Image 1 (cartoon, protein in one colour):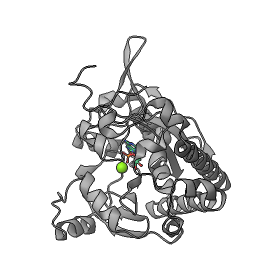
Image 2: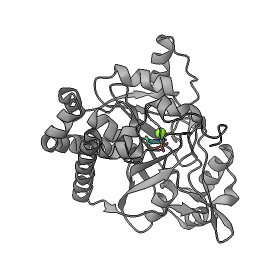
Image 3: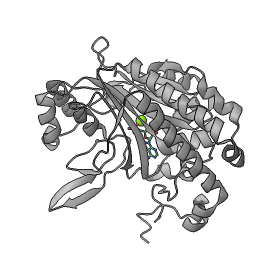
Image 4: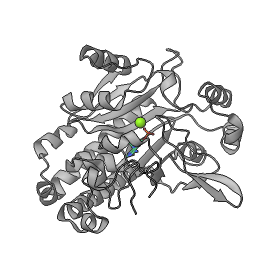
Length: 335
Ligand code: AMP
Ligand code: MG
């Protein structure tokens, strides 16, 4: 093993052996809860007339991402392809043929080594990824709230045994059925500064800040209006408040942190190219996507919920790796 590549070993992080993990009663209870969550998500989205699709797992380009995660290259007949870090580009283009879509799909991101200890990061995870043509940010925020509410309702009624085996405090979880609060990014920054936590007002909320806000909240809540420099080119800039994005994050209470990110999308070809340049992306890499945008992709809004993050919250797990059968903690060797 190359010690410059793998930063920590399994024992340092209290990770069990793969076989011990798979067969432990807690893991089996987690998988049953996750099964119910996935059924509930599909039930809910089917009733909302949202069509399930399967996005590619490799492509010439993927979401550029932020926060220092690296992409994984694949040799595709001599061309460099990438493993998907997010289905966002495909979600937007698919809306040329469908009104509302979702995918439950894997993503691979080589997250920075320091995320091995956040309890929130895996190098391989799944998203429940939803996109709705013509929708506003508020409409998809409400959709995300109702989707999480439906999943929690089903788990509370059908997984009592599993939740009790996992030691989940269900009174606390049922607060996810209350309306979610909302604060702006600027308000979140001010709250963090007031608590003595330094937070750059022009950037993503850092890992500790996210955990701090999350640990104080009684129920899931939204943070809206991230500043332009903090997110990718596809989050739409507010026409009325330049510099702010029409986007949101959904955070869980209890210190579990971010569950989902979403936004209204940029769909105008010229503005997409401008935003790519502003965010340091070379438009030439995005040929197929820009061709689609030039021909016309619909306005839309959507979000992606991290399946393992949501499982951790619903099941009350101490760390996100416990929400995966074969967890890949960043920088730790794993099958
Ligand atoms: P993002 O596009 O980065 O906001 O990712 C969408 C959602 O996927 C996040 O809100 C998280 O719930 C989840 N997610 C992102 N990165 C990771 C990761 N490294 N490990 C587990 N879940 C993640
Ligand atoms: Mg996010």
